[in-house]
Image (tube, rainbow, N blue to C red; front, side, top):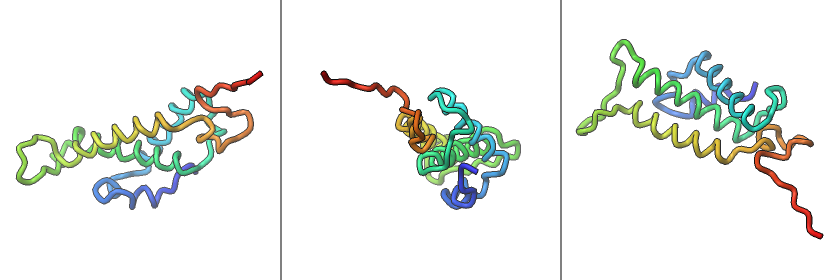
Length: 130
């Protein structure tokens, strides 16, 4: 398993309890999409700090989608004393979208593979001096 399910569920007070096994599977699939873009095979991915954080962000983003925009029961949690029409889930959704963008920019093939030999990383260039 690439992530610690319990730490994801405890990592965000609002979203943690909402995260289901289906959301975690979907988050892991998003990681595989990124891995393909970086030229890393699914089976070469190893658990690590950045991998855990990225999967958590994907899971929280999905939970926000479901709660903020997809709730059939009117499950939105509105901010008190605000003129904004955005609920807490909508605000968290914006935060996690930015967090995911930031993490995806930082992560390399070497991060996904744990510096496995042969994985030089995305946009890596060997420089020779002569």
